[in-house]
Image (tube, rainbow over all chains, first blue to last red; front, side, top):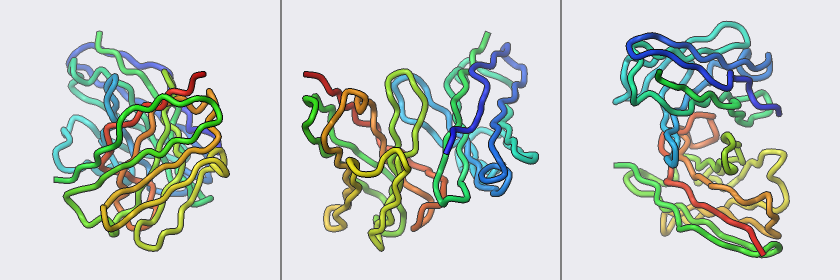
Length: 110
Length: 121
């Protein structure tokens, strides 16, 4: 199972919106609405931001939103803040009853 | 509140074995599967597999069959990751993470703090 494809890096200025893509196949992202997004700050454990494509767990800022079209899922961060600087990973359930993570995206706040 | 507390860092020689523990609290241990994730230095997250802590049947990712074993002890609400015949490339941070379902659903909502395993002679 190959990792889902994410851009290596995305940057934006404070207050701007950025979007991170996550491209899979018809056996994972395209087949299931079980796409999640995680935020990881250096030296810390990942934190769940989005699950089931577009749902936010309690306590997660509404500046984070998710969507999906075909084999590509997306995470949008609006009103970018300095604290959003981190690595972001998508994941998807697969037709093999397994999980696959994305390659990861480093977000830089300019 | 839900907490997953992992055992401390390990320094092992090639060929040795290691056992990482993940103690759960704040929820019903057998109602949620446990997922294991590896993160090599400077690299991304790799899904290793999950174990149904009620039925006991583990699922391993293809790259983690053979030397990697998931187990658990419900009496102490603890999941374990055993790695046998350690190789240099096994050096990484290993995370346990709670799945939102009893079986592996693909969504994990709580993570342990991670355990660093270093393999060096």
